[in-house]
Image (cartoon, rainbow, N blue to C red; front, side):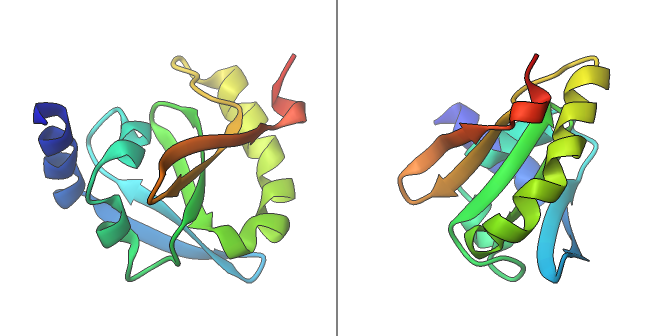
Amino acid sequence: DAAAQGLDRVLRATSVNVDDAAGHRIAWFETPSVSKASLLLAPGLKGALAPHLEWPILAVAPARDYLLMFSESARSALLPRLSQVVARELSTSAYPLAAEVLRASEKGLEALGTFRAATP
């Protein structure tokens, strides 16, 4: 409970930035926290993203301080474009995290697959 409350506290103090990529919205967090990726586990994530993205969302978190999120409906348009980003972040970050595509939904967080270009 304390961890969930802490994540929500950081999330409430975080700005959501949104941009267009391949005709779809893509979002990221602007926060002084060094662990942006952990905000995927915040109980308030759906509410924070509601004005910006349709739920459920997909995300890539190749490093602890790098997180991109987008609606599941943008999957086929955005995943091919993100492969190089994930590979670059995994190879250059001091704190690499995951080559997986993650899905956040009412069921929680699950890995859907791995970027082949990001794996050795």
